[in-house]
Length: 111
Image 1: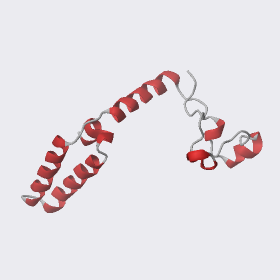
Image 2: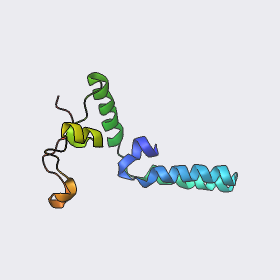
Image 3: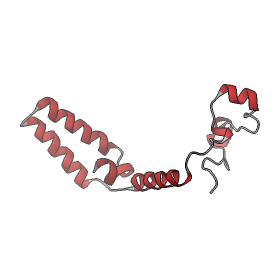
């Protein structure tokens, strides 16, 4: 629930659930049950978003349909490739760009 149903709507939810499970393992009953109860109450009241679940599922579907694709040159981090095929030509270092973002840069393969 914390990951699939709440996700990015409340990123703390997953850590809270994991911490509660660990508290239960370490404390046992009855104190550990209170930690689980707190987590359940928090998760039930938290905002919900399954955006990550949907996006990840779509990405898996795309990957299954397209197979392995070549990594775009500007995303590679291989010194040898940069030196032998001059892959750095046209490379835009996002940290040198206004707002630290290379506008117009593409990161996904063209369909």
